[in-house]
Length: 168
Image 1 (tube, rainbow, N blue to C red):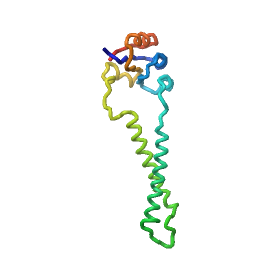
Image 2: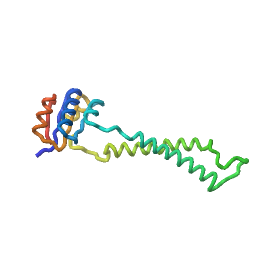
Image 3: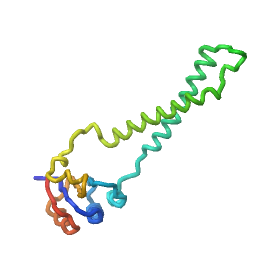
Image 4: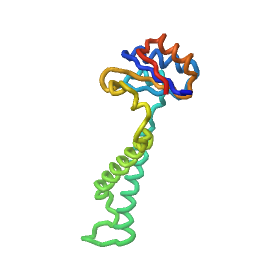
């Protein structure tokens, strides 16, 4: 017996209303696909705000700290050279490397967080095999509900404007 319901919509407003109703019915494993972002749909599905920016900020701070520490360690502690009476720890010269380390650490952390957070190592989802799913990039909106009571939910989705309801 199928445990996933897939509904196709031709208008974003209908998809938003259906998503709200599905969430009101208590379904939590709900996902949506569409040709462009619809903020109301994200709110209706209760998608949490991404914490990638916080991770990037923290990684950037770690990069700046490690860049400054590495330069200080090399120049003032591990191998101090007296060149023209200049101080061993010359902080203004550390700015460029600290900036570069900040950007490098933040970029790697952001790339990794987005890759893992979007489950990108998964190369295939059975939803992509549905006939007509390629229209998602053009003009259709899809809502998938996993672990659902198929008959009751299909009727509700049709009432909210689903063009077609399928089972998988």
